[in-house]
Amino acid sequence: MKNKIESFIKTTINKYSFDGAVIGISGGIDSAVVGSLLVEALGKERVFGLLLPERDSASETLEDSRFVCSFLGINYKLKPISKLLRAMGVYSLEPPALFIPRSIKEKYVKNKWRELPKEDTFIDDLQNSGNDEFRRGIAYYRAKHRARMCCLYLEAEKRNYAVVGTTNKSEFKTGFYVKWGDDSVDIEPIMHLYKTEVKQLARELNVPERIIGKSPSPDLIPGITDEFALGISYEDLDRILQKMESDPESLSEENQDDVRRVKKIVETAQFRNIKNEMMEL
Image 1 (spheres, rainbow, N blue to C red):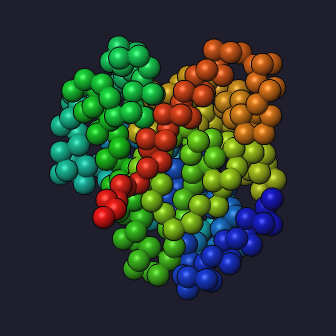
Image 2 (image 1 turned 90 degrees about the horizontal axis):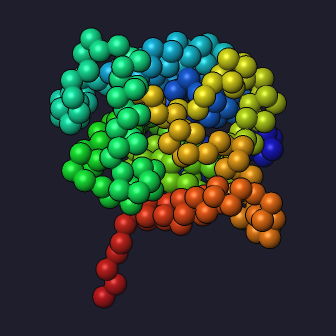
């Protein structure tokens, strides 16, 4: 697995005449794994990391991001995007958060997550549905990934580097990404791997346990982890997704409430996979 991905990276970089790769380092397992693969494939001198924290980022995010860059041995730049988001009017979409303890923010956000949806928060998000307050929340968090992508391309194009993504198969199948945000890249080295497979690869690449053992989080809104948003653990999600793909009959062995939810999420995620519609004359 590792060798094939590294070969893909080398081939793609050479095919399109890139001089190297830029990657956003989030301090999580996906960017640590992709960063490791890039270093193995290209050499650390051709890999550049960008750290893009903002007002709502957890304090450990920056610490872990720097730790990952140190582990990888790559050069990186710290570029906070709070001023950019404030200038865009993003922070004005939600109540002021200055001087409010992180624990209070997380409790507030989780309560809103449970209160606002018509039926299911994650599925409402995939459908862009909900009331005005819910849609403001959608605009609030999605703008962050889109701002980050602009920063990544600015840095990459100055160097003639490729922007390398970190979306995995679990995220893609469930729509757990931001359209025109973290999906807008030149190369996706791990999109064929489920999250649990990424975790296995992380151990093969000797990614530190400090990063492997973290609760996965998009770090866009305080308190919202991946599994909280999805309403299911990655272990259960990936097992169901794999059975849906290769052995549907064995789904009878799973919790049927989970199966129905995952099927609904995958079906609804098609809304996010559509990039644009072209009129045919």
